Length: 164
Image 1 (cartoon, rainbow, N blue to C red):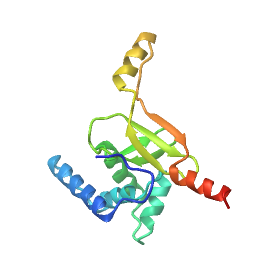
Image 2: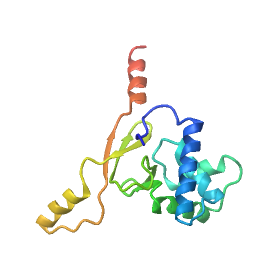
Image 3: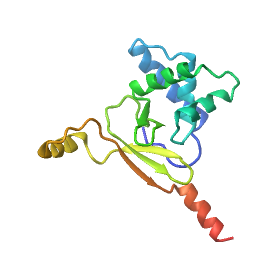
């Protein structure tokens, strides 16, 4: 699967395909994609921003059937556990995985102007980092790479504002 691009939201068919893959995956694991888990996954499927826990809850409230906070948190953590969502501990945000349940090291690209985020395969392997850490006696608990910058949409907006 290609990483999400900065740009328009995924099509309805792309979101439907994501749900079909998720349902097959969870059936194989003998786990259920409950209605709340599905709603949280949908929130991540259509949002492109790095979302805080509060933003996820706000998105779930839009249909008037907001779940209890703990239920929503458990659903989010379930999706993190099975690799459909990544947590960026440094920013305390969550980002949809572009390669759900595939073994990979994510790297995050986050726009500092609009908070849109996307994931790319990390150019630094965990093994490389682990070897370098061992040489210095450092014990690696986790590796996450992020790049903060400006997405193409915000660059276009800034360019059009300068030209007016």
